[in-house]
Image (cartoon, rainbow, N blue to C red):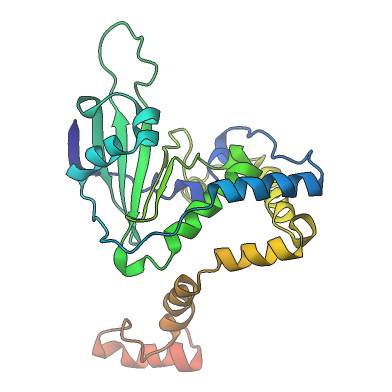
Length: 271
């Protein structure tokens, strides 16, 4: 096993929130052939089976890079998916995120006859930090599991959700896939992106509508996915804080007082 603190790109750790497999390969169509009632019954049964459990009160283990191989080895789903053992794994800490700690675990390829089918596999292990947890990881895990049933070609498989230590694991979405925002920034053009996104969103919105789910199930799902703490935090950081001079996170050099006042109170552009 090799553990490294030299980081890899943060593109991987949040990749399932990007377009994932929609950008550079043709995804399989989402499920649309079931009747609303049948689709609802199937999802309800699956939801009962896969609902992320509530964590009992217990001290959270804060993972570090040296801890990750042992954590993987202790969870059968991860051990089975990655294969191999400690000596076959490489751990890379991923940088760039502020909400989760994240690691890429690679199954190293060994020399030989090439009969090791699992060699070269990689998975992502990420842990929500205590000061920003706010149920975010549970909601994320349940949303991944739900999307995996509605449109499995659009999201990675949820391999593990650990409600005690707030850890989520999924396969690495490897190159040539990359976050959409980076590709667009680099000038890449995806002619099929609009129809693929439209198909994904229409499948998601249809499957999550009250008409398909039923009013009672829909209300329960809305309540289950609600995350008022993180919504309030995002509102403060993104929508309120930057526009409130009194917010403690806002600071500037004294010589910029007039420019800041003009920008905030008069809407005048700087310069």
